Length: 362
Image (cartoon, rainbow, N blue to C red; front, side, top):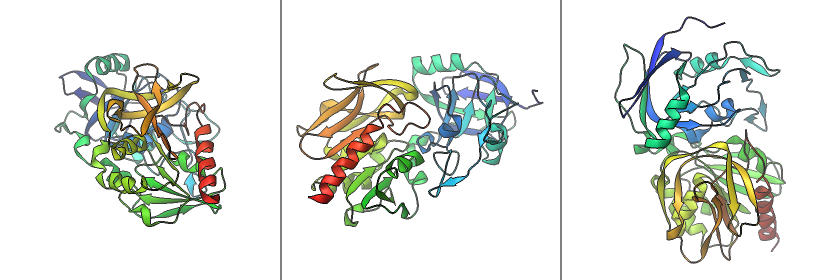
């Protein structure tokens, strides 16, 4: 049953206003407005650090229907979340399910949002908002209550990676293969996927000089914001490129590897955020359905000669991954770990681990 709620407005920087009803924290917020077309996975999306500073518009109509799961831990990580907190600035949906039902639901989505002080609006036309963002491009916006207006704010002016990275080194697992994971806003399922192998995962802060660490493989995580602001990570990566240690990157990690190699990046018009983005290998022998969440891409025309495109997006031809022609370095712009989403490309973790074993045993 629908409850009595306050009115709240989504205001876009182009002047468009969408008035709806609040079902989250009653406080105004400003950020960058983006949309996600996934049918399921709102607990995972809301806790994805790549959404830091963004007001998320979810296009699927059934949001909140299965509540929010418990934060039971497994391997030191919350089993059903992608981080230890909600990272979006605000949430926009068309219809909220006040009655939820699921075997592992611990609370309602509304209760969870209030707990983390995240404002949210429903009863707005998310289709109209999405069409506007696809036409005009991602833009700044704000969720405001009548007596709590505030100015627009561009989160990309901040080093968002520094806000979401771990403050100190953390270790998971006790396997024979030592993987150093550079945390630029890592999704927890990346760590879970690595721990499926005989690994010890050493998670280090984004600006940590990992080159002094003993390791059998190096992993660069996803994360939010403009990759060019991660100057320290890029510098450390350039040093690592002088070695033959296996390196894998995902999402922001793909962009950082491109920048470290000497390429440039650019901001996409409205980004890729969904569970059904088709990506193909450059030889066109294989195509995969992938899960994605990013705003920037590598300009492949600027890649140096010793690097090549590994994957490309079949919708718009943008880069979906690069690899070195002779060294064991490769990356993907999409998310092979995909929680929630397709797992068509989970084999990339296995390929990385095989390179790690070769390196360790040489």
